[in-house]
Image 1 (cartoon, one colour):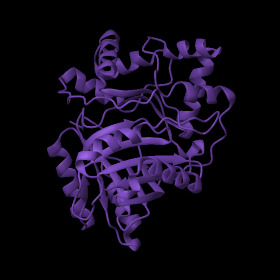
Image 2 (tube, one colour):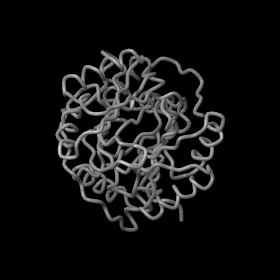
Image 3 (cartoon, rainbow, N blue to C red):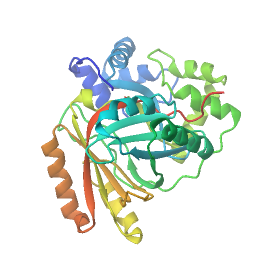
Image 4 (tube, rainbow, N blue to C red):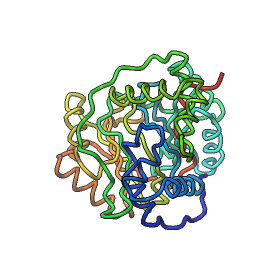
Length: 334
């Protein structure tokens, strides 16, 4: 299980840094210097703050969030685990390199995880391996359409998740990675270092020039291959102690309109449609994060009432424990 020591509150510089740079991270040779200029600080102070928060886990990494299934293949998955075996099975699931998020949720299907792999065959093999090890069925819930994938969090003012103008991004075609691009994706997986020229270091890892890396990142951002580039934070250390996966069984011909409506709600951090599966009837999902359970429940109920969603079968699964949280691994080991 993910257990971290209590972290010190963010100081005023760190609040401004986290609030301002969870997206739109500068694509310039010295990005921390550019951020420092915008904040009225020194490059050294910004680098020190990032390094400090990387070390204590408030910031998990600095880098790219790729659109789901544009690079590699991924799925949400769930297992109904007997209570007495939950810790054992959770450890086995988390041990797989393909698993990046792994949570206990309040439901008969109580173990939920996201698995990502270089391709569908690799992903299927990983899930089959998990089934064999656990001796339990894995329910696969692949993505059909993403409406809002952001997960930015305000730590300074109102407690409302930080978000740019809300709009449903158009679908993006899968990206076939050449060898150089595969190396870039692999080099980005652990994030940019807290150093004066972080892109130079990533380029060195990838075996490409810094100029080539910059052009590629700009292109991927413009095409929507990368949905967000910046500080990737962990929500619990920032005070977002409650999160709920809200699900509905919406008629398929109404799902896109309902998903787009959810995407426009400021409290929704994730909104997407997934394939149904035997034992799981729901196809529309929204994640809501908040500082306490009551606030999340109230916001969910208000959104559902405003959009008329609860006329459909629905459920709410609060997270109880985080067993693993890490950036996805898209290209695999060779």
